Image (cartoon, rainbow, N blue to C red; front, side, top):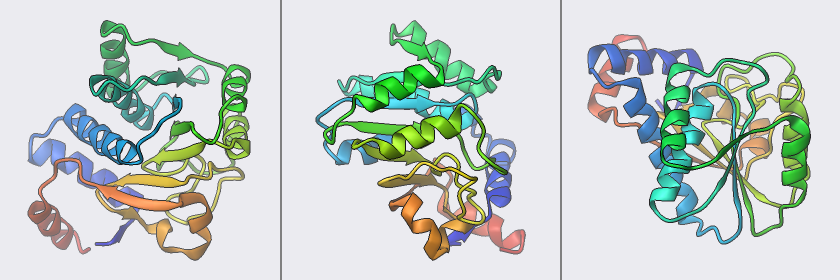
Amino acid sequence: MEYLATALIRQIDAAAVQELGISSLILMENAARGACEVLESCNPQGRIIILCGPGNNGGDGLAMARLLAANGSECEVHLVRSEKTLTSDADSNLRILRNCGIGVQTSDSGAVQTVIAGLTAADWVVDAMLGTGTHGNLRAPYDEIAEAVNRSSARVMSVDVPSGLNADTGEPCGVAVRADITVTFVAKKSGFQFEHAARWLGRVDVCHIGIPQSWLVRWCKSHGE
């Protein structure tokens, strides 16, 4: 169970909702909490920039912003929607952030690149733009932003998988974010085992999302894993 295919992990998430009754928002909250704990363990001293996409990966980043604020850490949140509709859970976390008075900037590629260009080695970028569903060549604006992140001297933490990395093959989708730390959930993705993926992943930390390990083992065995 050290490495699991992304399709199987999506099935596990769905089964946790349907069979265990854990809401998808709680799973997202737990994922964000685990990612925050990893980031805070690095004792960040500079700016924290969270880049969020419109999917559930972005929802993790939005939830992280609130949890970091709860611990007194300020961050800047940039939502890169590319004209896409947010998933239900991402939208819920966006509304909660706004209710809390925490600003979220809906930014285009140029604005985000300008912010990233001003970062220093004391700063952090949290990459929560794209998740495990990324296939094919990365498109604008995400390819441009990924390249800007890679040019930056800031440290980078990717949420679940570096944006633009195919989590099943470990190959970049043309362009991928190069992370110092990847915080992934449930288990390492199958593509993480390949040597060529290491340059994109950096250190990999696995965080649980509230699914009991004993149930997870039984579920995987019953599904042939």
